[in-house]
Image 1 (cartoon, rainbow, N blue to C red):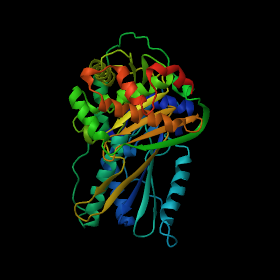
Image 2 (image 1 turned 30 degrees about the vertical axis):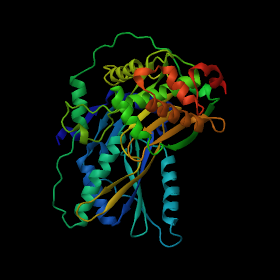
Image 3 (image 1 turned 90 degrees about the horizontal axis):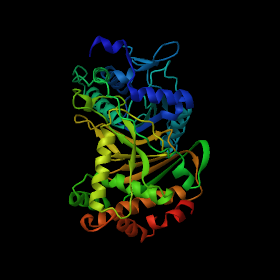
Image 4 (image 1 turned 60 degrees about the vertical axis):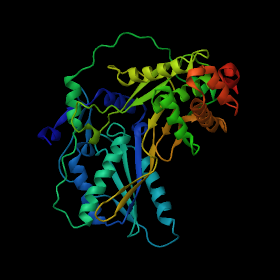
Length: 439
């Protein structure tokens, strides 16, 4: 790693946007916390493994500066991280350890993050001498969802080596986020052509009968039917599009069914790790960007052509040279990772099990379609209060629309056919938009 990693660098455009929103609405709006189970747990070895992981990845040492500066910067001081705070919990019921850990992690998560003072990734462990629940509280300006898995993978590797008595083995160099920042500087985006997009902020929340409720959060979990992903993959092959295209199409029909919009508008998330930057696939940092997507949902449109248009729209959004503000109140995230993942050491069998991510987001409705194994939908409702059952029904609408897209022959159907197939359960249809928008 170059000496530049110990100096300062500018923020990427996406980091600047996150910082701007955080300064306006509070740092907690982009806070996240990764929660894991570590077995077996040896405090000294775990502390050393974390120190080595931090040394490998500069973004785990990141601090940010903007007060009194012409432009915000990020810096990466060298040196060992502060000791991992640890709480010992002994005795009691078998589930007491997790209960205490969850309460303490919740307390940690409610503390305001000071990105100018603290390192932006801080761990906390609660253990009983054999196992530990560990959380890492962070901020989206530092890391994305892929990064959290890279962090846990590399931490498991370092911990496994220490437990096996191989402390002198040197890890391979990690990818550098700073290389990505430099690449962005050397490849500035071309000016995007002017494009007028309607402001759709509040449409979906209003159609659901929602009201502002700052600080309130809910999460709805809907597992996919056992064979749904198999049917979706088969439908994607028949249609000549990706699985992600079908998932985005299902969300477009879901939002259209609730709001009556045509075209429909929502945010899509690109993972943004460019192949031009060596090692970016194994780099911790914030690479994601949320981009608005405007999709027509014309009922008489042939389904195969419509799915092709959805895929083309996604390709344009994910390769956009200039990001635009998101003037909509829902985002769809498609993740190929399993919602629960376990990292196991090859030498000792130690394991770090990825249990959960507690996440704040400034967007009122975030639908995360986890299409790994098991597949499920996580529907996050942030800062709004919906009438009883509305969030659950929205999640169910999506699953019905996705199921209908998997069943209908794209060569012999139009968009309205999909809506009718979904509505047979029943689900919103384009013919009944006004009713569904106010139901």
